[in-house]
Length: 158
Image (cartoon, rainbow, N blue to C red; front, top):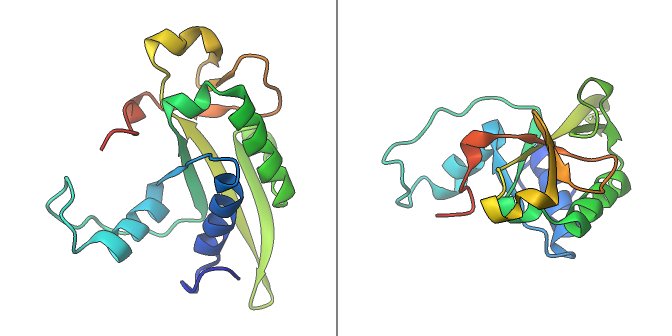
């Protein structure tokens, strides 16, 4: 695999990030993996939180799309193409914003899941998106959307 972390979830994140970087599509990681990576790589750095948070087990990649990404139909279409190219399939119970693929780890199957979440767009960009709560996507785009996470407003700000 790609990383030296000995964790297939991190490997899948690195694989996804490398492919998206080719199209200048930045991603932000949240959830359990985000906490794990923060603790592992940034616990000695000063952050806005003066304490370490509890790390929890996770089986998915919570991918947060910034407000500028969720309004960009070309980037969202490319994101879907990359997800397909990497072998992820749509999860029917959360159609087009959750995807999964099976990998083999020590000859045992493990499912890796991607959850797409998005920050609300800026007011000036509202005309570029279609919102059917809790889903959001750029207008005219098919087969992909994100879960609108109002609480993630401004995630692109430090």
